[in-house]
Length: 104
Image (spheres, rainbow, N blue to C red):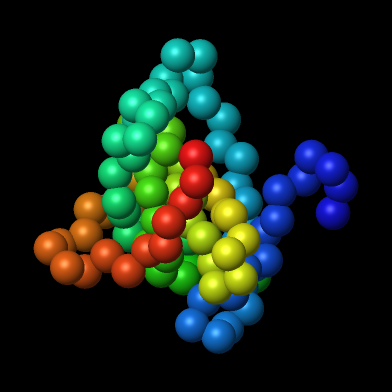
């Protein structure tokens, strides 16, 4: 992995995954950032290399009408981020979120 490449492999519940790291094209001005320190807790179905998804508990940092940038910390305290299709991201119910602290 190079200096500017972000990690794609992560560990959750003892299992190793690799997210597909989609790079959606956004129209100019279509992406909004949540205000710093107010990023909402979310539960997202992150797309995986080879197909399928895995549920992660993290924070939404940026969003458009079609995509949400989700950040989370894996079991090794590794900071992860991935664009996820908006229909695969939701706000958790009370007491459902099990995420870890993410330093922004």
